[in-house]
Amino acid sequence: MPNAKKVAGSNAVDLTGMRFGYAEVISYIGKVGESNLWRCHCDCGKDFIAKTGDLRSGRVTSCGCSKARKPYTKQIANFAWRFKKRTDLLRISKKFITVNKNSKSGKRGVFYVAKSQLWCAKLVCQGREHRIMCASLESAIRARKRLEKKYFKPLR
Ligand SMILES: [Zn+2]
Image 1 (cartoon, protein in one colour):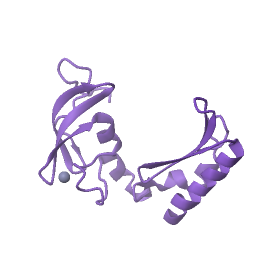
Image 2 (cartoon, rainbow, N blue to C red):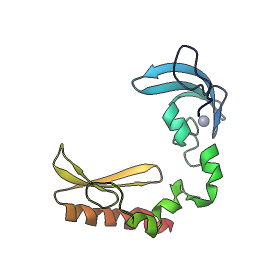
Image 3 (cartoon, protein in one colour):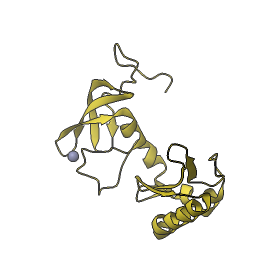
Image 4 (cartoon, helix red, strand yellow):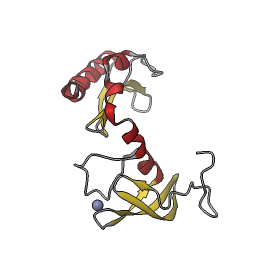
């Protein structure tokens, strides 16, 4: 957003008046840590507070009353055809999964956690993150496969 309006006296991009799903941004609250917080008004009548990142990413589209309802954000609406139950079908297609991303393991969704000296199999599905910690790379790859089977397969 190069021409985005900023909140006066802050470097936060002004979201006031913008709509994210069922929520309308009412006013800027302030910065907590790295996050800018906003007072929002939900279509159901409740006010609530949300972070910029959560609004923009589509993680938050209401006060929480509409978790079961389909999320609606501008970005998601534009790509609605490829979403099912909040999951980007393009990302879980076989082709995409086998692409090696820049993780240390060379396997998508498997990476090494130096702090705990364990391998982690991670999968994000429908906005929820699932992690399995493993002692070896091989078992983490197997764990990731199990996660794909459990969470992605029913969606395909
Ligand atoms: Zn609500």
